[in-house]
Length: 222
Ligand code: 2AM
Image (cartoon, rainbow, N blue to C red; front, side):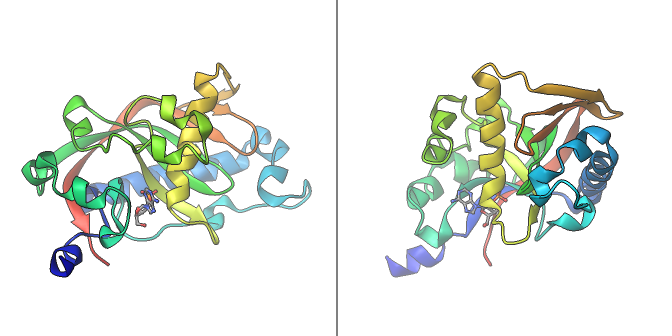
């Protein structure tokens, strides 16, 4: 049993091809830089700084680590709940090493994280753990009532001291607000799409054209 445990990875997910990682990073950096210059953002700067007068350089504020990917299942080398069952799912075996195209449909920024929303296809949902949204219930109470795959995202950066797991929770929080009927405050039409403010430093850019990126379903061992 011990031997088997060592084969369960840190996490499974879709890893973006190296050739598209730069494109995604550049697009998100461009968005973050533009957001920083908007009057609407400056008006709500205290969400990020705690103080109205203080300035923030969003480009420096977030730090990106590791290869860009969309986590399907965090396994923690077998210690996470449901890790073994997931690793043994036929779909995981069938799709392991295969290539797919991820559709990035929105970018979001909060005082904690910056990320991209990934809209999964029916086939990609076969690899999505059925309890991924429900697991977030203690943090985002409405999470369990959101459609399967709602949590799917790519972490593009985290504020100092913030762990990557936060990105999916931030996304669920925004989607839960939308589901409750909160339209958010439409801010402006940007080149990439429409920007909406959801309060408490939560900004969502719905992309006019989704960004399609090639990715490989695999796993990560640190
Ligand atoms: P991410 O998917 O938002 O990037 C290793 O830490 C990877 O697993 C990261 O990609 C991280 O977040 C994800 N991760 C860490 N802890 C997690 C958890 N409890 N639930 C889901 N994903 C987690």
